[in-house]
Amino acid sequence: MKTISGYLSVVSFLAGCLYVLINRGPNAFHNQMDTVLTILAVLGVTFAVCSRIAYFIILGVSFNLILAGFALLLHIGEGFGA
Image (cartoon, rainbow, N blue to C red; front, top):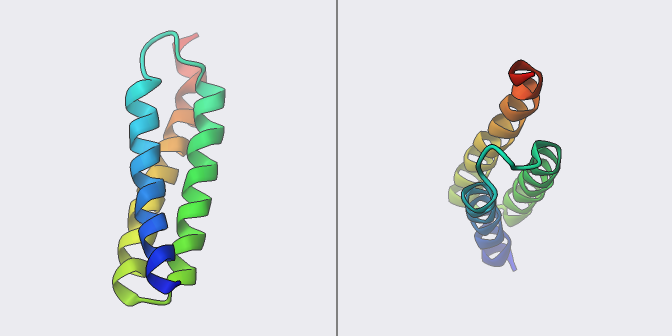
């Protein structure tokens, strides 16, 4: 069960990256992208901590914090284009 949680943490990061690549562009709904990336990042960090294996904790938390940081930058930068 511990390794499954670790793998799910990495898969949530990959799903977030894939979501950004599919939903990019000027017509993308950024509010929805913020929400989806934040939910995936929180799930990924939760899975990483639940795995209790040091490798998956470090890898999962760092990757998903990068994803959460990208979602935060996307949220902050929403008003600059108007």
